[in-house]
Image (tube, rainbow, N blue to C red; front, top):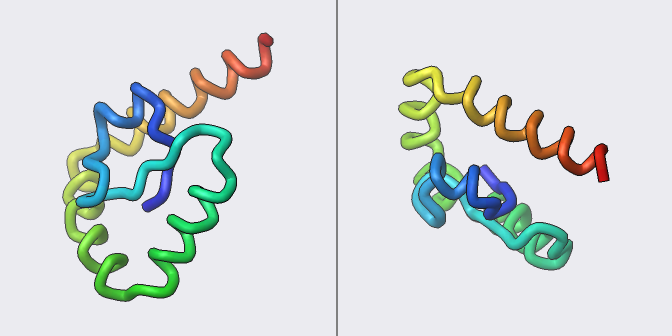
Length: 77
């Protein structure tokens, strides 16, 4: 998983373990993180297990809510 390291997201995901978190707006960091996951199966599989546990705990609804709130904030500016 690759995501922005927004405070709300950082509370839910462990950078380097369950996700690669990048600074918001840093397109180079985003590109590099995505390529790292796509090019390295070991990294992808390492992050898959905690994400499966994460999903099984139904935390995905929390992540969706955080994204929704963030998008709404952006749209209001």
